[in-house]
Picture 1 (tube, helix red, strand yellow):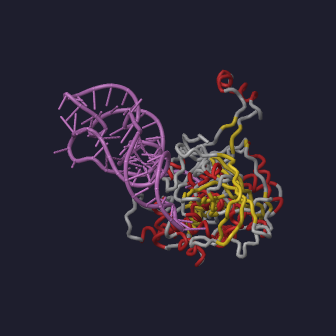
Picture 2 (spheres, helix red, strand yellow):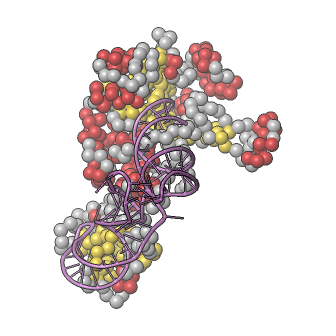
Picture 3 (cartoon, chains in turn orange, blue):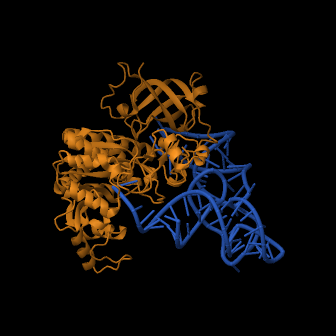
Length: 466
RNA sequence: UCCCCGGUAGCUCAAUCGGCAGAGCGGGUGGCUGUUAACCACUAGGUUCGCGGUUCAAGUCCGUGCCGGGGAGCCA
């Protein structure tokens, strides 16, 4: 007999998921057992959804020896009859006719109890926390959101491209990179720099990528509209709830697009993903709304309510100055927006997602397109309540001479970027793109406040246990 | 990396002014009931994060290290 998923049992209207005589096979993990005289209730969960199936087990000679081994956490198979439940609380239940114990879970040492645990504790058992309601829900939403990302771009004719993870370039000079080497550290330390470089696998220093953007630009200038969706790495010693050393980024890049179209795409993407979560993850989102963030559903619906607000950086500065608020970091023309400023703008002042654009060139990366005012660049940041910066993007500088001047201005050598510059030598075209932090999206959609809890096995400073 | 807060039973926490180490949940045992994070009774369970110091006496005070959390910076 083929096993039936809990999700299919619970969502069945007429019980036809079972065989003609109601027979079915169920496999999963015991969430709880309630013993009565002569029989027991087992709550079995298989991860397919939030809910459990209640299994009624008689204390018969065939079943009892197996039942006694089925504590919270044990893995089992249940053969039985699907019947309408006579008691309130569930529509269906299964009357067991045979039990198989795959793996016991010793009650005295199994860390997960039938009660809520703190996030901090669950992080110390990252290998077991997916078996809790909250982390199971998060992982299902994470999977659903990944599907939604691909659906969004594929339906708009974007090609999914795979940017390299090992890279020889420092991309945008953004942040510390993880160096990758095949050399034994002790031996490498004894070599001269030149000998060491020659001994390296690639014959040159290699790093883990911090962004697929530069490569995506090359492919956008061939395929038109492309996007990457993959892991990126930053060796920054950031100890915050919003940063991880390994995280996934969605990076679309569009040929023949300007900054306004870039902002249009970012807004459409975020709205599409939020809408997808609301419609496809309703049960799991309800759990987050109940136990993680009471305002979650109103926040998500609020995002869809009205268009995002767009304002130039200089205008944002004026709004902050006119607010009458005393900020820890005073604002002045040309200053970067601090976290407190971003939060004020989207959480208090405008009370909706805000896109700030046209930043002073001094505080942005070299590849961003210089505006006609010669002072600002065509960059944009999408700020959302609670998370802050969810998206960062720009129209790219497609003019070779301007790009080279900018690189010289910020002190970047042009030689390592010869291939990047080549794209501006041959068939250069306006183009724009952005990066969306996938984990930050998940924090937005689930209400989970710490990035460590939207990644199954998070990598943060001094944390590589699992 | 900087600032602030914390570390006590498996988990979540309490312990007054420096004076005998406590509860709930979880575990074990027994009971009871078509039960719903079941319920009732009994019971076991401690290097109070490590190291050093002050004191008749330290979970409590001081120094230091480690770990965790919040905020900041960096950014997605």
